[in-house]
Length: 161
Image (cartoon, rainbow, N blue to C red; front, side):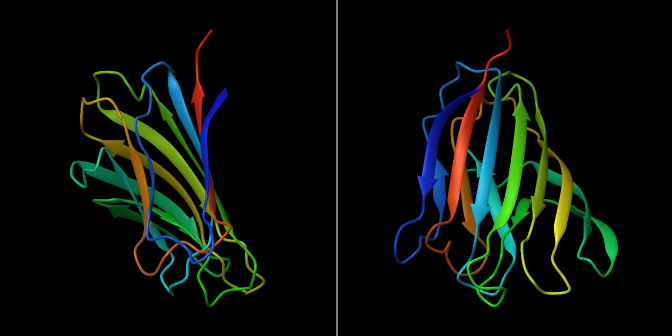
């Protein structure tokens, strides 16, 4: 596993973070996130190659009070919001096998909020991008507000031996 890039949000926050020009020299990708939003929404959009089409997600989720499942036609992760415990961040991971192959891209995602409240969300998702294009860029954007300062995202490339 080799670190390709880490992006840490600076003062004032940012509306989105994009990993671009991802090399096709690895077998798989692993993305690790630590996110906090400046808005009140918990959802973070994830798009490949600047496209928002051909996405599907099945998730199991719980918030410490109730459990449920859902399906989405877009890719979503979660983040801690501005109204939740100060100085806390969500933690997440995406694992994308065969990201440069000529097949549809199926991958997994786990996300958990960190907060001192009674209710904090945890997602476990199976996702599918119905495209045979290689993944060359990955964009993360909060649905509401910006990513707060010190949010960070790290992209790793993994080669099979």
